[in-house]
Length: 207
Image (cartoon, rainbow, N blue to C red; front, top):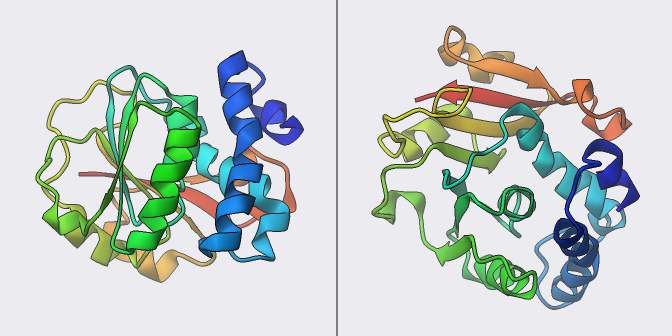
């Protein structure tokens, strides 16, 4: 909790309880269904929770915002963001059923009423009016845009224009070249000082 409070000092008591419960919940589920590498569990809060919350630093979600998390895996970035923004609504999807089983169990244990988890591909969901589509490096951005195009609302009421908020690291020059004039890159080290975030970014692509 200390690491989260270092960067998000204004959490409610309920949010503190929910974030504090996450490591034990994931350790328990990870022993049954491997959704996070065993080695990574040692740095669970930094590598998964705090990393997910970098999106909150870039764009806080307003009440009743509709957020789609594509390829959520074990629930990242969707679960931490749902705790941070309890008045926003989150749909977390993944094509691997056992991962969604973990996501749903964690959401239930944390009593996250603002989360739906579905075992499906993004191309098959009927909803098309999301404010933001979030994800954590599930594929090349060009392919990702193809998956989600047409699913973003035309009505903007956040500071950033509706679209994709994508967590990714490393050398992105070639991957992002097709979107050079549209994207904005936010270096995560401007928010966090830990070495893990040195090359990591939040990519905003309006759609």
